[in-house]
Structure formats: structure tokens, C-alpha cells
Image (cartoon, rainbow, N blue to C red; front, side, top):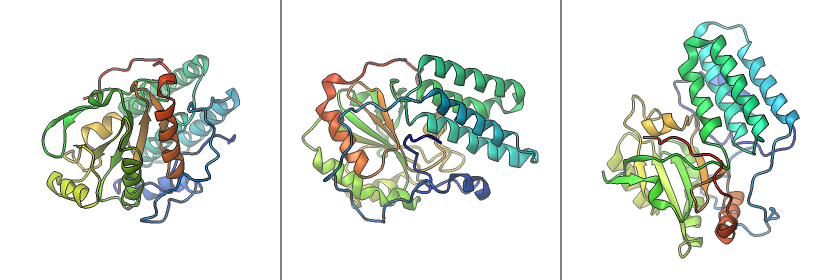
Length: 293
């Protein structure tokens, strides 16, 4: 694969209901930080350009070929479905790490449509990754989220417009999520006097327990409670955003546009600071996705 940034995969918790063998595909992408270890932005050499880089046509060809090879594996129906769920998510997630040209986006959409035509019984599964490509990539306005927070109060993502936002899909059940708490506390402290917010989507089963945990851990930000689905990792917000691994993070600029997906540790801290410094130059939205409820 060419040299673009890789998503965190070893540093991700996956639902137990999915086949563990499927996620062997994710190995080799770099380990998470040690539990309790907070990042330090000192010594960072990241570019001042806050925009993600662009994919090359060769990158897109490579990703499509990789997806097709995975979907072509001869397996029984259940294993194929589990494999396809991860392969399609991995395909769409990688496309979230950089920017597509209009021609590349059209190519990807057309290819996914052909996969739906070839597997009409899996249209609902494939549509989740189609939504990630069509509405959840850098440069697009983040879809609205409407729901109740851990205290039962109404919460909207658009309430935070005008601030740089780190949207974190997390849960205390997930060890990797817990290892990220020091990063979240550091962000809150570093940027407490700036137009910045962390907003959580909490997937724990018990909202009251999740609220106590956030207070005990010093996570002073509001979170939707999304743990009341068929399983705690199948809440309506997680389903709408096709979250397969926890934690998942979206970084939005002050206009609500997605700028980065799944930054980790030092890079997250630094990029948030850059977005705060460069807010007047934030890119305008390139698409207006439908409302997510």
C-alpha cells in the first residue's frame, strides 16, 4: 500500500460477536499507547497544513483490488458475511484517512453499487460502508446526531458548531478506550480556554454507571448514551456511523466539517491545536449529508 496514514486497528476493540479470525486482517498497523500514558505534543514535526492529503489513482485501484480479493474468497454464507462486514468497513475506513477527487469518488461509488448488484441480499450491510464513503469522509459536513446524553437531556451535534470538536465513540468496557482517557483529559486541559469540545458517544450498557465513570475519570464532557441497542455495540448512533471498532474518533473543524478520522495520541493533540489556530481558514463543506438520528 502506498504511504498514506494507516488507521489504528491493533489499537481497537471489536465486538465479540464478530469472528476473531476476520480481524487477523487488521494486524500489523501499529500498537496502541501504554495504558495511562498521556501524549506530549513536544517535538512534533507535523505539517502546518491541516488538510488531509489526497489519494492517488493507484491508491484507489489498490484498495478496490484488495476489497474484491477479500469478497471473492470461497466461504460459507455466515463466514462470507462476517468477512464482508469487516472488509467493506476496512475499505471505507481507509478512504476516510485521505481525500478523494470527484472522479475517484465516482469510481468508488460505482464499484460499491456493482457489489450491491452482485449481492442484493447483502444490500443493507453494504449500504453502511456506502454511507461512510458518501457522508463521513474528510471535507464533508458531519451528519447531525440527535439523542439523549447520559443524564437523559437532549443533545445535538450541531450544538457545538463554532468549536473544534473531537467526536469519540467509546465505552468503559473497551480497554483501548480506557487507555485513551489521559489523552482526553490532556485535550480538555490544554484547550480549556479555546473554542474546543470533546463529545462522546458512549456504548456502555448502564448510562448511570457510565456517567459515574466519566466523573471519576475526569472526563468533563457530554456524551450521548448509545448502549441501549440489541448489544451495547449496536446502538443507533454507532449503526448510523458504521462504527465497528472502538474507540473511533472524528475531528471536526469549527464549521462542522470532518477534517480527520482516528488520529491517535500526539497527532490528535497537535492537529486539534492546528485547527484551533487555523479556524478562519477551515475548508468549506463539499457535501451536505442527510440527518442522522
